[in-house]
Image 1 (tube, rainbow, N blue to C red):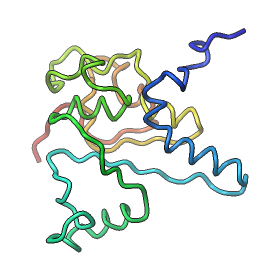
Image 2: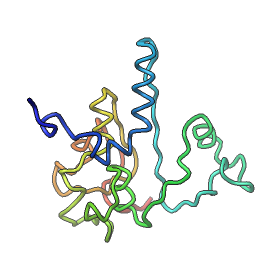
Image 3: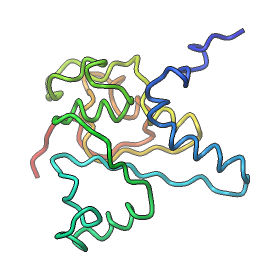
Image 4: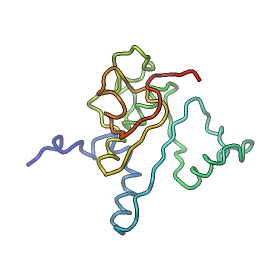
Length: 172
């Protein structure tokens, strides 16, 4: 018989699978109900340096300031108890894998342009999980999970396409 590692991560013990479970469970249920129901489109936004009430739907003094974000949020799932690190690299590695950054060795600093490291290649990302389920995955914005070699790039970590910058900051 085939081992669990030969067929991918074991969903019961893989943190990335556990992190994506609420989304995947909804997808499985929907697919079982009817083949004619299209899979939902999923948009996940991670915004740096923004407080919880810095968008209209979560604020009493900024109502109407972010109408598109408000519409997406009220028509979707709002994660209100997602606590994150204060820096880009650790926050994104936690999101991508469902693991604490300290379990990944990603907790200390942001990946700089000359950094010869990145999100460990042994880790499964949520983009890889969605891609395995037949989704087209697209990343837009800041990657900041490694770029030293091709294996660390977003298109090698589960994204079909990526448009953005790879390092910790850019100047407009």
